[in-house]
Length: 191
Image (cartoon, rainbow, N blue to C red; front, side, top):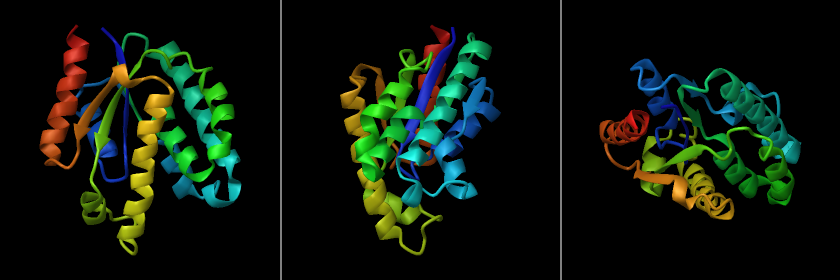
């Protein structure tokens, strides 16, 4: 059986490491990296100056990738990092006025109704201790990413997706968190 998952959580929760390892160890057939992170580090668009255009560029690429997955990975188990859930959480933090417009774009996704959410939660202390990207201001990073985490909860609630969420405390040892995610993905694939 094929299944699609969104792996979402705040910075340092382990999304990228878990997704890459799931793919490397053949637990899944496809891992879709975080498109917003790619945009951020490429410098193509600056979220602080581009405003809602930044969010639209990411969402368009996500929906395009959703079509690719729908057409080419029908019988495959796929994990998408951050995906529309995380992107909407970022939007609510940076540009909340664009939420309704972005949701209309997201509704064009052919897989939006079938993706289960694996939500990795992480504490302020662990964001501070784990961050390497924001080592010059780990406390500022923690404040920003805790807002993202709060907004992930709002997005899940606003989209009425609570019944499709598996929450995992990512403050645990990485191997334990990976094991829980792996069990979830494997369990569903075996049905």
